[in-house]
Length: 117
Image 1 (tube, rainbow, N blue to C red):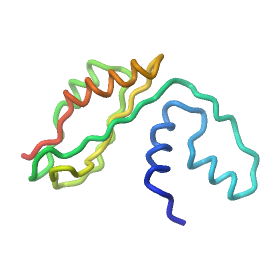
Image 2 (spheres, one colour; image 1 turned 90 degrees about the horizontal axis):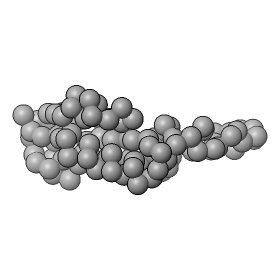
Image 3 (cartoon, rainbow, N blue to C red; image 1 turned 90 degrees about the vertical axis):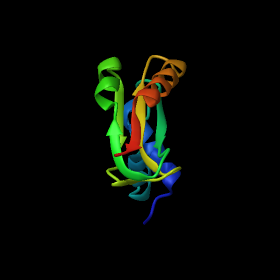
Image 4 (tube, rainbow, N blue to C red; image 1 turned 180 degrees about the vertical axis):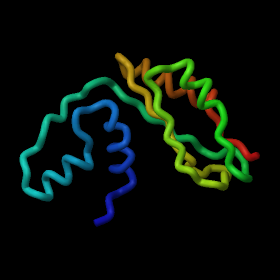
């Protein structure tokens, strides 16, 4: 069974912000199991890292972003080649409010770059 991309992304976002993720909930439903607790732990926001140039991928700024934000997770997909518009990874942040989480991923996305070598 292949899961839709938007569901996978939703599951990734929920991984840090909810007690259970969509992928687990769907698995429980498919197996006829009762659903577990789906309470929100903290508001969580995800922002994609999109290629801005073509070339060999070089991830920069992660150490600086981690130093600035303790509630940040960077997921780099390990693609060797960056292309304009290509999804290369994503940033996930948890915070006390959705607005705070949005601000964190927006600031972190200015620090973290996937550029060509």
